[in-house]
Length: 86
Image (cartoon, rainbow, N blue to C red; front, side, top):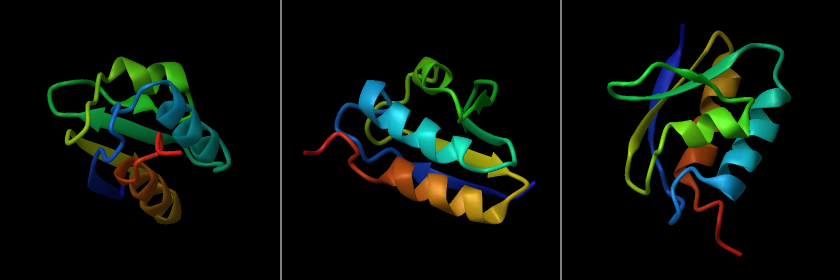
């Protein structure tokens, strides 16, 4: 399964707003997209609640996995952005 690591760019980490943006983007793909941090089981990137359970703060390294390489690249790019900036 293709994977890519990404460093969380949002100042608040992967909390409410960033998690929702990522979940909405992941839900657009037919393939399952998973997010994980070291030492934890992967979670469904299509669920903002599951993303928030990772507890990934700014600077945390997150692994994005999916059978769809396009989804991996797109979601990893979102993880690296400051999605809470207005």
